[in-house]
Length: 151
Length: 116
View 1 (cartoon, helix red, strand yellow):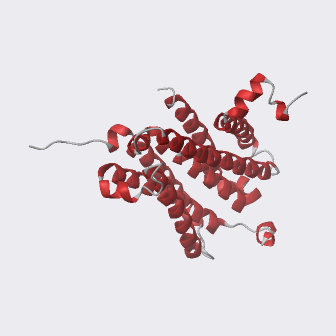
View 2 (cartoon, each protein chain N blue to C red):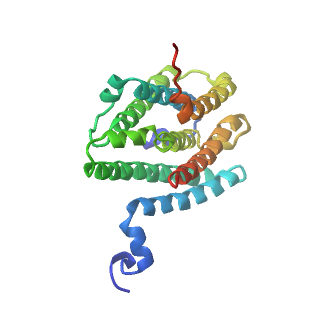
View 3 (cartoon, rainbow over the protein chains, first blue to last red):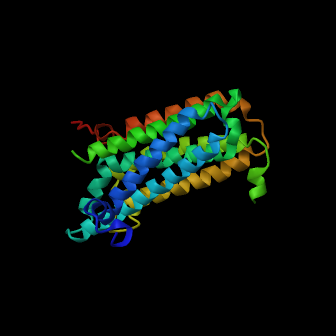
């Protein structure tokens, strides 16, 4: 084993050289865990705590992706004439859609943090539906953003 | 501070405050986007970081709006019985999300008509 964090490995070096891609991979991984917990949350109250952890991790990863995108955007714009071209990014659907998972994951994290184990109670079915729906819509939005980036 | 979270009690007023703040933030987001697209003065005002453009102002304002509205609403709902708000709030949340998705479609917010 040579190098730091397997940096000599061609597969890992690709991901480590592009932090945005690395964060996106982590996000998909954490979303996968969190969605499984969201489906099982009604069966065991102990899973609420881990679901909260997963939601906060997803939020931090989303925030990291947005910050990296901002830096990437500023880097790209410095090679152009002005910021007119970067403003075009705003008019694209991707920048607007990115607000959805950020807001929804904030909501899901805070609701599970404040409500705790009572989230699985019968009286809180609306809140549980909002938490689960927020996660599903966030994942759907992330995939729409990914698809739009290919256009 | 951690005692506040570890003590067994249901903080439904805080949950309601979070949900109302999120719903209002969705409305603020699409209205802000519409203003940025339509008005040059708002677009210039929202350009906090010149290298990034109005995106920086929009995200900062959205974050600020969410935090401020959450603080105000959590003070407003503090100690109140909010159980009757569950179903209306659920509807308002879905309506806000649906409004955001519709109003941020490019052919909706960029729609214009020439009247002669």
